[in-house]
Length: 525
Image (cartoon, rainbow, N blue to C red):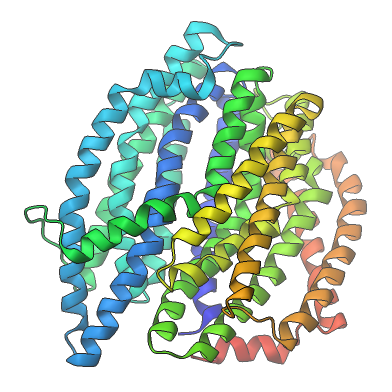
C-alpha cells in the first residue's frame, strides 16, 4: 500500500463530502442565517458531533484499528489464512458490548438534554427561554446520530484495516446529501421550522450511513453477529485504552466546545454562528489532509511496529509529516490572506449579512493560523496509538486545553469571537510541540535530511502564494456582489490561481520534482 495513494483516496472522497458540506452551509446561511434559530441548531449539533469526534471517529478508531490489525497479523503469523476470522471474532465481541451501551447512553443524554444545553450555554442569556427551548428540542432530535455513527465507526475501522479506505471516507457524503435535500425540499416557512428539519436530517443520515457500511462490509466478507455482551480480556483492554484516547483525540473538539460555550454566554447573538461558519472552512484542510494522512498511516505504523521494523516506521512518520506540510501550509496561508473574499463569495446571501461576513472572515483568519498544527496533531498521534500508548497524548492534550481555556478567557473580552480563533490556534501549536517533543525524546521520530530540506522550500512557496492571493483577493472582491455562479467562478479563479502559483513555486524552489511525484504515485510499500 502506498501512503500517497491512500491519502489521495481518503482526501478525494473527503473533498467531495466537504464540497457538499459547503453547499449545505451556503443553503443554511441563506435559509437559517446567523441568528436565534441558527445558534440553537448549532449548539444542538455540537453535542453529538463532540461525542462522535471523541469516541466514534477519534478514540474508538485510534484504539480499535491497531488492535484489529495486531489480531490479524498475529493470527496469520501463527496460522496463515486465519487472521481475518480471528479479527472478526474480536470485532463481534466489541459490537456486542457497544450496542447496549450506546442505546443506554443515547437515551440518558436525550432525557438530560435540558441540563446539558444549559451547562453549555448558561440558558442563552442573550436569547431568553425561547432560544433555550429550541436548542433543547433540537438536541433531543439530533442525539440518536451519535449511536448510529459510532456503529459506522466500528465497521469503517474494519474496512480501513482491510485497506478499503474509500468506503468509510464516502459515508459522510450521505450526511451532506440528507441536509441539502432537507433544505431544498422540506424546509419550513421560517428559520425555526427549517432548523428543526435540519435536525431530523442529521439523524436520518446516521441511519443511512450505517446501512451503507453494513452492506459494504457484507460485500467484503465481513458479517458481525450480536451475542450476549461479555467483557473478554481483549474488550477490557480496549475499554481501558479508549477513555484516555478520547481526551487525546478530542483536544480540538474540546477547545471548540469551550469556545462555543463562552461565545453563547458572553458574546452577542450571532457569535456562535460566526464561529461555526469560520470553523467549517477551517476544518476543510483538516478533513482533506490531517484525517486522510492520520487514517492512512495508523494501520501502516501498527504493522511496522508490530513486526519490529523501526526504520520503516520512522520513514513512514517522516513522509507523513512531509506530505502534511506540503498540503497544510498553503491551505493555511490561503485562508488567512483570502478570508474576506471567500466568506463574502460563499455565504453572504439571503439572511447572511455584510456584518456577518466581516465578523466571520476575521474569525477564520485567526483559526487558519493553526491549520498546520491541527493537521500535524492528526499525523503525530498515530505514533503513540500504534504503540498502544493512549495516556501520553491525554496528558499533552490536557496541557493544550488549559492553554486554550486561559487564552479564551483572556482574549474573548478585548477581541470578541476573534479571540476564540487565536486561542484555539495557539493551543493547537502547543499540542504539536509537546507531541513532537515526546516522540523525539523517545526516539520514535527523527526528522531526516529530506524532510528538513523540503520544509523551508515549502514555507517559501506558500509565502509566494500568499502574496499572490493578497493582491488577487482585492481584485476578486468586485465579483462577490453578483449572482452565485459569478461568485463561484471568481473564487475558482482566485483559488486556482493561488494553487498554480504554489505549484510552480514548489517546482522552482525544488520542494518537489515532477518525476518524484510520479514515482510516489507508482511506488508501493
